Amino acid sequence: GLSASAYGIDFNPTVDRIRLITDTDVNLRINPNTGALAATDTNIQGGLDIVGSAYTNSFAGALSTLLYGLAGTLNLADLAVKLAQLPPENRRLAQAAASMLLVVFGVKAALLPLYFWLPEAYASATAPVAAVFAVLTKVGVYAIARTTTLVFDAAALVPAWPLVGLALATLALAAVGALAARRLSGLAAYLVV
Image (tube, rainbow, N blue to C red; front, side, top):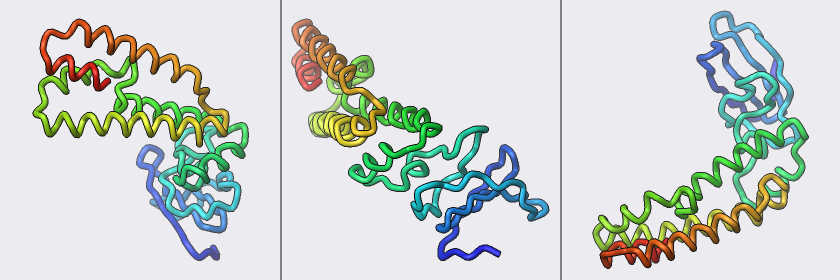
């Protein structure tokens, strides 16, 4: 039998299997029709006490398919330490997760080439909504700066220099857009970028 203090389960309908994870590093796949053990997968390494991860090993060769499942935490300081210690077979997955986060933060921060939605949205928004947009854009910039310098750079997952180039190009295009603006709302929109 299994002896653990915490258990987590998830169902993958694609292969019709149940994933069972415990805080004692058990990582099993079970056939839901028979209850029989379908496979014993590689344990989640590092004694991370993960019991709430979503379905892992959802494609061949992957030890885990979530950033949380890889590191066992979402605390940025802990994430930096855990990602730096990842085994080589999980680095590509961590790089993909880091890239997805940077795309999401890039949209929020209006980073080139993801900023084209912003000027029109600002120009057509009411003043209170535009004020919220202005604050949230800065939150996106902060999220990029915080995650790249603290987490991804420490783990050598994403180099920071391409982001600096994109930021400078965004500023240059925003300046051109501000110079070409014909309405005050358009000028304000490009100046916020």
